[in-house]
Image (tube, rainbow, N blue to C red; front, top):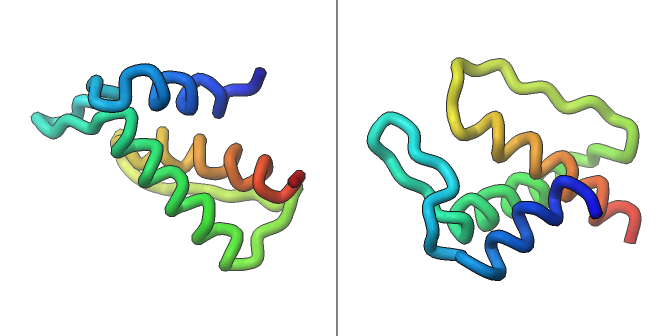
Length: 80
């Protein structure tokens, strides 16, 4: 089991439950998972490879969580 499994399992069991609440906006597990998948695929299309470093420079926001999971999912996509 890896950290991406936590997101995948929660998305499968309770997709409509709140995953992130930030500044009055609510994002469900399904919404976060969809955004993570899109970012992971975008990173692949940009040509990132296993071992590449991905950085984010932003204030505290949900995009940190999305980026973390997207980088991990991208690693899983590459290993298949």
